[in-house]
Length: 496
Image 1 (cartoon, rainbow, N blue to C red):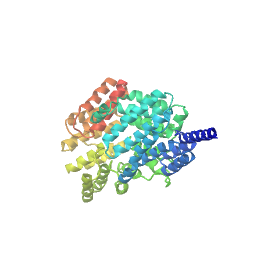
Image 2: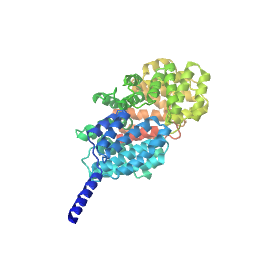
Image 3: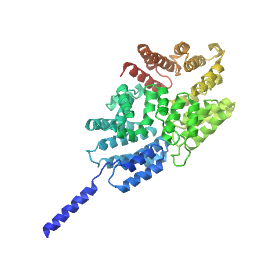
Image 4: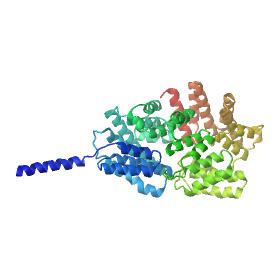
């Protein structure tokens, strides 16, 4: 009798122990949830994640899926109340994920990815020190996971991306990499990511939504392959209507590549269903596409809508600056001045565009209207319209030194966009001569552009010379972002 009771006890204990074992089971339900979340259909994705949890309460993958949902929500909307509620969850999930079996490739992978999510959210809310530590830990975790599970494809997307980004950190943030002992390589990192993108591995195909969002950004900003980044969306036939994450990426890169019409069409054609994450980024980007075509009334409407609903701080000053320009160009100086006051007291200065907006507002000066119109048209991809606007003008038509400098730079950018490279280089050199010791960004950007032109021609030594000249210019606007791009250029030319 006693032996029988002991046997029953042992069997019951084994059953309880077996039931309590945590697992990483990225099953069909979890994969469906992942697909929904990475389309920004957050609520339906979370419902599926909960379904997966109910199917197996010991499955830890739903925690990873919920981390994605919190990250995208915080990163895109920057709502402080949401941050107070959601940010602590990252640490809670990390603790729970550590209960999983270390024999699974998803053990370190999941911990690394949640650390990346936590760091990305922290950056948006000014917690740079915390973000630095989390990025370092994520980097080490994924590095270790590659050693333990070299055939686990998902490692490559995270590790390769971190390698590429760390390898091009600008001088202003270099302390982060050196302090945390991170060393990267642009060339090696991009090779790894590209391998993942083109892989037939089942996991690479499963995680394609995420990869197809990250890869174009890396190509655009790290490799300076701007056209290729946007071509990628067409070649891979990304669904820019029903996947809002991909639509945002395509529109955002379109705006930054002077393709405002394309960006506008992507935004307007997206699926307007209430199923998707509600975010003000669409109004923000539509406002830019409109002001770049000098449609100032439409631009003002979208920018005002963004500013009325957005709870975050990134690009708020930039948005107010563009809104003030709308009224300034309409001739409504009183309204322009009223809007400009908001630049002095709202938003943050983490982004270079916000720093610039604040500096301009503090100066009390307003830009030359002709040059401002030429700038906006040029930035929007309307180079011919910008050229017509400046036709017949010379340096002598502008009294202030900064206006002479800007004129030379604007003409150079327009020639550059029209593929008149020698004319562009000649005017870029004038901009460098006039502005290399001034606080405006024109000279540094001119050096960067010349470097890119020579790099495209295969004249890498000459390209490095101009990239270095860009890096050597101090105390100018957009220093961090221009340095990062110049450093990326040097790394590309050297094959690092």
